Image (tube, rainbow, N blue to C red; front, side, top):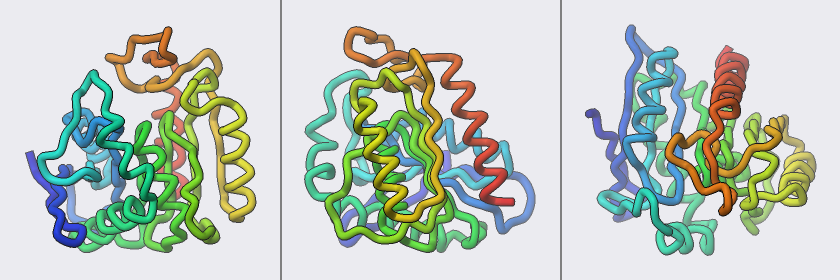
Length: 234
């Protein structure tokens, strides 16, 4: 395992980096974790991206050693970041800066993706207006606006959404589309019918709570990501 350590102020963050074969520089994809913190599932996504020829970096929003319950309620970890989106933006941009400083990274080709809470993280990086990130991708993410001053969104945005996700009902999805349009973003929303929250997580099995894995949506969303990365990276 190759750890990827960086700092945000006095806080040490510890993620994971997977490098593709061959000499760089390579495009890089940051992976923002769900509300439970950075896990082996994020590392596996990084490995999968490296096999496609990209540097995969599973970032750490919560800080070194701060991890949640894989199957429990992690609102106590996520909540403070949802309440202070300026701090969240700083933490995320620290990760972007650290990835850009990696000697194998092509700094002109950096993308962030994220799952659930990580989807909100990816959107917040786009909302920041940073030119360092060329695109942001949300998998079954949270769409709540940041409440920060609006900036033009220069990153391309891809949102992969389960239409029956109770965390982001249709009105929230439409509101996100309007927000992205107002920010002059190049955006896409792919909505999967009959699909709930956490549709990429094989262990998700609580349909009464609106959480359920979908093999079809998992496959289709990964293909959508693959096509999008090929377009963004050229």
